[in-house]
Length: 315
Ligand code: CP
Ligand code: NVA
Image (cartoon, rainbow, N blue to C red):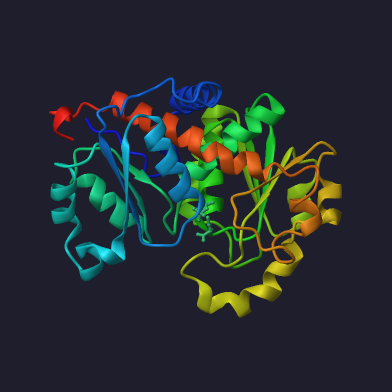
């Protein structure tokens, strides 16, 4: 069986913990694991811009002994409409794994259905699970634990970060609160799934339009841009409804006094977060950005180890 990571709940709670433990180990000893020695190649495909994901996967694959091959899909035949199924058959004979940042989650799922090497979601419109793995590693580092902690996410409740926090934090046994304007609440199907997971892990899920209520007593406060990639046309319309959800000093005063602040970055100071908060003492965003590499290295190592692929030496 080939293991993929297309959404946060592709890892069980036990597997999520194993990956986070491995990420900590890799952070302590950078070159300790060489599952891609050869070097074997990992294809990193981008349909959208990226700084952190591109960097952290490129450096991380090299750390694992492998060769990162970054491709902008626009410069491949994918950009000219070559079917995903055909691309899958070409890719699987060359590379050990595929990491893809794209628009539709269904396209990523389609690739995974037709390929026999691990596929990793490097962000879709619906989920950003690698980011949330790094976020969980960061929370554990600063708070010592995950289960039982409350994470409040303020902003676009219907975007990829919100959906990944819902699933990823529920798997970790956390209490997830989404504070978002009416009309921008999470996808009800994902919400149902998060509730189902939380029931089995001791976590919980809350969605509210009251920003203050969402943040009250939270151990972790997180936010993200109000205008995700691909939504640029809606930028003006979003300003007014999202304004009350800015993570500013007043909102932070409602959170736990020792709360930490997460932002996947890039941050738009004066929009979803103030400069005082993102650059202030409670912010751990640079640790979070660094942890992308450690968490993704651990994830790749785990997926490769737990996949049963024929003839890996050819990739
Ligand atoms: N957080 C994140 O995914 O950043 P990039 O868009 O720069 O990769
Ligand atoms: N929600 C943002 C995340 C950027 C890393 C986007 O999709 O653009």
